[in-house]
Image 1: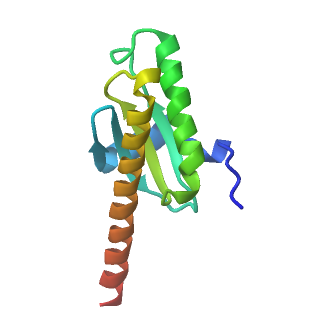
Image 2: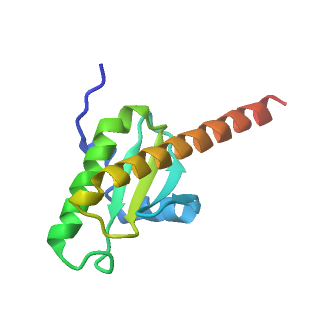
Length: 129
């Protein structure tokens, strides 16, 4: 059974951790979210959040979005490939957008899993040839 806790080791904290994900230049985006991702060598995914003041002026709104995204990740972290994710909010959302943001998050995670799985398989076949 997986624990559904969002532990410290599942967080991106340091600036250089964020920078390395941004510098990897792989990203996927939809209406509300842009997710930058980079495969990591750990056995689990890590999450970093970026919610700018341009997106939501009020800290109450930014913190709400942060809490919602953290919760989406917490519930799904066991199905996410070992990648570092930096989720950027592109468009402000609130309680009435909750379901559409959740569906968007799910579909982006599925695409990232697909891409990172395919890349891992390609790397393995290149090594064996």
